[in-house]
Image 1: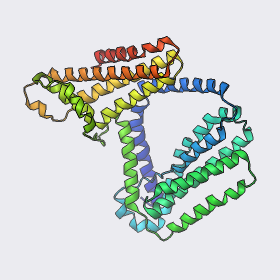
Image 2: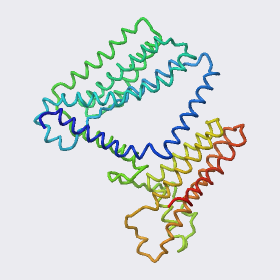
Image 3: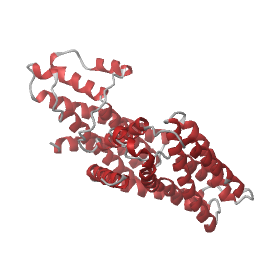
Image 4: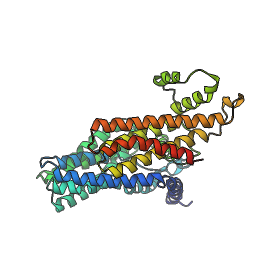
Length: 396
């Protein structure tokens, strides 16, 4: 490789290929169906709410706070690796040519996170906040500039302090971002004066970086944690060899084990239930999907949409828990005992049925708490149970 530009290019290509390798398993199947119905139902509910929204609703403040908080979280994507602590040391004086590429990618890969909320909020701003299109255009430009500023400051702060007290820095930048966006919305006279704070803050941390060695260990750890979060997310949809599920005892659930009678025939029932409770990936997967089902049942007001939404999540829960508990190829102590081979399969099916009934009960509680008027929504628990049972019977 002739220079650091080639290093970035090769790593960037490998990084994109790694993302594509796993993302094709994420945005397919049931998740795509769920996204379609969630976006459709959410858009319908949003438009209906706008028709009756109060005129004194603080639209500009809400948008400014949400986007300001999102702007403050701007971690850089550097693609730095552990061997760089040795091999890039001779090139440290030229490291900024590599980092400029990294910061450019960080900006463009994160800009949608702050522009999307603004796009979604445009009907709210125009109908409720009475904001003019020209003002929204100025806010858009301000947000783009603030995103660039936040990314540069966070990188400099991470370099100067090796990540220590980063949330304090983010809090200050969030306040500056929120104030600047609010000033843009209101077009106050001291709008230009507010620009002094971002410029001064930027100059302060750029001076702090000069003369300091690059903290390779900190940025390597940041990259490893960032990729690990992605692999853990992708592991919910396909097998990722980089990830091994973490285990936690959860002593507050020990009392639940007593529900399984102490008998020889219940050995696999006990082991499967204990595996489900202690395995983070499986347990939190069911917890998240159940929470989404309850929220959807409570707040999606379109019966057909909420029925499909809850049914899709019931299918996702049943199929993924069954596969997670059945496909384990690792050695287990129960393999040493003379248990019937089909005992574990039956235990897995029994557990899935139990947790899906529990999911149905939670959905019913959500419907009862909200007190929905459509009587057909009280059939949602039945849909959860029926879809789960069909999934278990038809899947391998």
